[in-house]
Image (cartoon, rainbow, N blue to C red; front, side, top):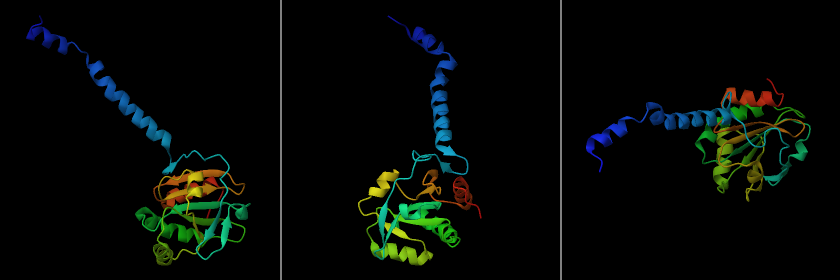
Length: 188
Protein backbone atom coordinates (compact mmCIF):
# COMPACT_ATOMS: atom_id res chain seq x y z
CA UNK A 1 0.00 0.00 0.00
CA UNK A 2 1.33 3.46 -0.94
CA UNK A 3 1.26 6.26 1.55
CA UNK A 4 0.38 9.88 0.89
CA UNK A 5 4.05 10.85 1.26
CA UNK A 6 5.19 8.31 -1.34
CA UNK A 7 2.60 9.54 -3.87
CA UNK A 8 3.65 13.16 -3.33
CA UNK A 9 7.33 12.36 -3.78
CA UNK A 10 6.60 10.44 -6.99
CA UNK A 11 4.73 13.44 -8.45
CA UNK A 12 7.49 15.87 -7.56
CA UNK A 13 10.16 13.75 -9.27
CA UNK A 14 8.68 14.41 -12.74
CA UNK A 15 11.28 16.60 -14.38
CA UNK A 16 10.31 20.08 -15.56
CA UNK A 17 11.40 19.07 -19.07
CA UNK A 18 8.80 16.28 -19.16
CA UNK A 19 6.10 18.68 -17.95
CA UNK A 20 6.85 21.44 -20.42
CA UNK A 21 7.95 19.41 -23.44
CA UNK A 22 4.46 18.58 -24.83
CA UNK A 23 3.24 22.21 -24.81
CA UNK A 24 6.54 23.37 -26.34
CA UNK A 25 6.26 20.80 -29.14
CA UNK A 26 2.65 21.86 -29.79
CA UNK A 27 3.66 25.54 -29.93
CA UNK A 28 6.52 24.74 -32.32
CA UNK A 29 4.15 22.86 -34.63
CA UNK A 30 1.70 25.77 -34.68
CA UNK A 31 4.50 28.19 -35.58
CA UNK A 32 5.85 25.84 -38.27
CA UNK A 33 2.39 25.47 -39.83
CA UNK A 34 1.87 29.22 -39.76
CA UNK A 35 5.19 29.87 -41.46
CA UNK A 36 4.47 27.14 -44.01
CA UNK A 37 1.08 28.54 -44.91
CA UNK A 38 1.84 32.25 -44.97
CA UNK A 39 4.51 33.60 -47.27
CA UNK A 40 5.43 37.28 -46.88
CA UNK A 41 2.91 40.07 -47.47
CA UNK A 42 -0.05 37.91 -46.47
CA UNK A 43 0.22 35.72 -49.54
CA UNK A 44 -0.76 32.13 -48.94
CA UNK A 45 0.93 29.35 -50.84
CA UNK A 46 -1.93 27.45 -52.44
CA UNK A 47 -1.87 24.03 -54.07
CA UNK A 48 -2.23 25.56 -57.55
CA UNK A 49 0.78 27.88 -57.29
CA UNK A 50 3.30 26.80 -59.93
CA UNK A 51 0.71 24.80 -61.87
CA UNK A 52 -1.42 25.58 -64.94
CA UNK A 53 -4.59 27.49 -64.10
CA UNK A 54 -7.71 25.35 -64.54
CA UNK A 55 -9.63 26.37 -67.65
CA UNK A 56 -13.10 27.87 -67.43
CA UNK A 57 -15.77 29.37 -69.64
CA UNK A 58 -18.42 31.20 -67.62
CA UNK A 59 -21.35 33.46 -68.38
CA UNK A 60 -21.37 37.16 -67.60
CA UNK A 61 -24.41 38.83 -66.07
CA UNK A 62 -25.44 40.13 -69.49
CA UNK A 63 -25.26 36.69 -71.13
CA UNK A 64 -21.80 36.89 -72.70
CA UNK A 65 -19.06 34.36 -72.05
CA UNK A 66 -15.52 34.81 -70.78
CA UNK A 67 -13.05 31.96 -70.82
CA UNK A 68 -9.51 31.64 -69.57
CA UNK A 69 -8.55 30.65 -73.13
CA UNK A 70 -9.85 34.03 -74.40
CA UNK A 71 -7.38 35.73 -72.03
CA UNK A 72 -4.38 33.72 -73.27
CA UNK A 73 -1.21 35.78 -73.43
CA UNK A 74 -2.44 38.20 -70.75
CA UNK A 75 -1.69 38.19 -67.02
CA UNK A 76 -4.95 37.63 -65.10
CA UNK A 77 -6.14 38.54 -61.62
CA UNK A 78 -8.98 36.08 -60.92
CA UNK A 79 -11.01 37.05 -57.86
CA UNK A 80 -13.73 34.89 -56.30
CA UNK A 81 -16.25 37.03 -54.37
CA UNK A 82 -19.85 37.27 -53.14
CA UNK A 83 -22.15 40.21 -52.43
CA UNK A 84 -22.72 39.05 -48.83
CA UNK A 85 -18.96 38.88 -48.08
CA UNK A 86 -17.65 41.73 -45.89
CA UNK A 87 -13.95 41.33 -46.84
CA UNK A 88 -15.07 41.32 -50.50
CA UNK A 89 -16.58 44.75 -49.91
CA UNK A 90 -13.30 45.93 -48.39
CA UNK A 91 -11.21 44.79 -51.37
CA UNK A 92 -13.68 45.84 -54.12
CA UNK A 93 -12.30 49.42 -54.42
CA UNK A 94 -8.75 48.03 -54.75
CA UNK A 95 -9.82 45.72 -57.57
CA UNK A 96 -11.85 48.49 -59.22
CA UNK A 97 -8.82 50.78 -59.20
CA UNK A 98 -6.65 47.97 -60.58
CA UNK A 99 -9.14 47.25 -63.38
CA UNK A 100 -9.00 50.89 -64.45
CA UNK A 101 -5.33 50.32 -65.29
CA UNK A 102 -6.15 47.46 -67.71
CA UNK A 103 -5.15 47.87 -71.31
CA UNK A 104 -6.08 45.86 -74.37
CA UNK A 105 -3.80 42.85 -74.42
CA UNK A 106 -2.47 43.70 -70.95
CA UNK A 107 -3.61 42.80 -67.48
CA UNK A 108 -7.11 41.31 -67.17
CA UNK A 109 -9.14 41.52 -63.96
CA UNK A 110 -11.96 38.98 -63.72
CA UNK A 111 -14.40 38.31 -60.90
CA UNK A 112 -16.18 35.01 -60.29
CA UNK A 113 -19.31 35.15 -58.15
CA UNK A 114 -19.08 32.43 -55.51
CA UNK A 115 -22.12 30.78 -53.97
CA UNK A 116 -24.32 33.84 -54.37
CA UNK A 117 -27.72 33.32 -55.97
CA UNK A 118 -29.11 36.82 -55.30
CA UNK A 119 -28.82 38.45 -58.74
CA UNK A 120 -30.16 41.75 -57.42
CA UNK A 121 -27.56 41.70 -54.64
CA UNK A 122 -24.81 40.89 -57.13
CA UNK A 123 -25.87 43.72 -59.46
CA UNK A 124 -26.18 46.11 -56.52
CA UNK A 125 -22.66 45.20 -55.33
CA UNK A 126 -21.22 45.78 -58.81
CA UNK A 127 -23.02 49.13 -59.12
CA UNK A 128 -22.16 50.27 -55.57
CA UNK A 129 -18.42 49.70 -56.11
CA UNK A 130 -18.36 50.73 -59.78
CA UNK A 131 -16.88 47.45 -60.97
CA UNK A 132 -16.31 47.59 -64.71
CA UNK A 133 -14.45 44.28 -65.07
CA UNK A 134 -16.42 41.12 -65.92
CA UNK A 135 -18.11 39.28 -63.07
CA UNK A 136 -18.84 35.71 -64.05
CA UNK A 137 -21.50 33.36 -62.74
CA UNK A 138 -20.44 29.92 -61.52
CA UNK A 139 -23.85 28.44 -60.61
CA UNK A 140 -22.68 24.86 -60.05
CA UNK A 141 -19.40 26.01 -58.45
CA UNK A 142 -17.45 23.93 -60.98
CA UNK A 143 -14.80 26.62 -61.45
CA UNK A 144 -14.57 27.31 -57.72
CA UNK A 145 -14.05 23.59 -57.12
CA UNK A 146 -11.39 23.41 -59.86
CA UNK A 147 -9.52 26.23 -58.14
CA UNK A 148 -10.02 24.74 -54.66
CA UNK A 149 -11.95 27.75 -53.39
CA UNK A 150 -13.34 27.14 -49.92
CA UNK A 151 -14.51 30.65 -49.06
CA UNK A 152 -14.32 34.21 -50.24
CA UNK A 153 -12.52 36.30 -51.08
CA UNK A 154 -9.80 34.29 -52.79
CA UNK A 155 -7.64 35.70 -55.57
CA UNK A 156 -5.41 33.89 -58.05
CA UNK A 157 -2.62 35.59 -59.98
CA UNK A 158 -2.15 33.89 -63.35
CA UNK A 159 0.77 34.78 -65.62
CA UNK A 160 0.52 35.33 -69.38
CA UNK A 161 1.43 31.66 -69.96
CA UNK A 162 -1.55 30.45 -67.91
CA UNK A 163 0.42 29.43 -64.82
CA UNK A 164 -0.80 30.28 -61.31
CA UNK A 165 2.02 32.29 -59.74
CA UNK A 166 0.30 33.74 -56.69
CA UNK A 167 -2.67 33.21 -54.42
CA UNK A 168 -4.26 35.36 -51.75
CA UNK A 169 -7.04 34.61 -49.31
CA UNK A 170 -9.03 36.78 -46.95
CA UNK A 171 -9.19 40.18 -48.60
CA UNK A 172 -6.56 42.03 -50.58
CA UNK A 173 -4.68 45.03 -49.31
CA UNK A 174 -2.60 47.25 -51.58
CA UNK A 175 0.62 45.54 -50.41
CA UNK A 176 -0.76 42.04 -50.91
CA UNK A 177 -2.14 42.98 -54.33
CA UNK A 178 1.26 44.35 -55.36
CA UNK A 179 2.98 41.15 -54.20
CA UNK A 180 0.55 39.13 -56.33
CA UNK A 181 1.00 41.40 -59.33
CA UNK A 182 4.79 41.15 -59.00
CA UNK A 183 4.46 37.35 -59.09
CA UNK A 184 2.95 37.63 -62.59
CA UNK A 185 5.30 40.33 -63.83
CA UNK A 186 2.91 43.27 -63.54
CA UNK A 187 4.05 46.55 -62.01
CA UNK A 188 2.42 49.95 -61.96
